[in-house]
Length: 93
Image 1: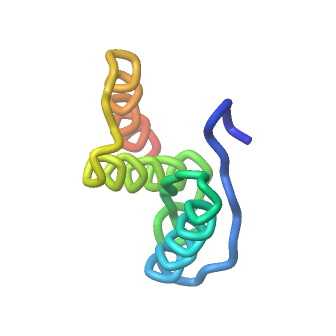
Image 2: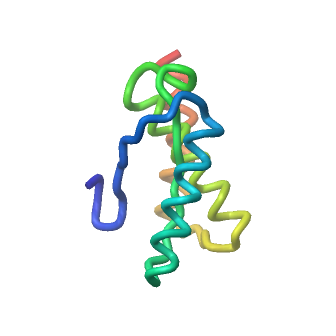
């Protein structure tokens, strides 16, 4: 658990496409139980070799998917948070 409504789930997936398929399966399963959820995902080590880099990739995917679905309504606080991730990635490169 990363926060009141944020969770990290570790699953075995060798490729980003397999991780996407797994996240979509989990989303459909939970939505069928009236638990709406959207996942982001990242694959180690292809997309990052440490937690912050993987988290940034997963957040980018999560926000992109929510935006496409019309689920994300940014507030001043959330817009500021999203702006911090690219700076954190540049600092770690």
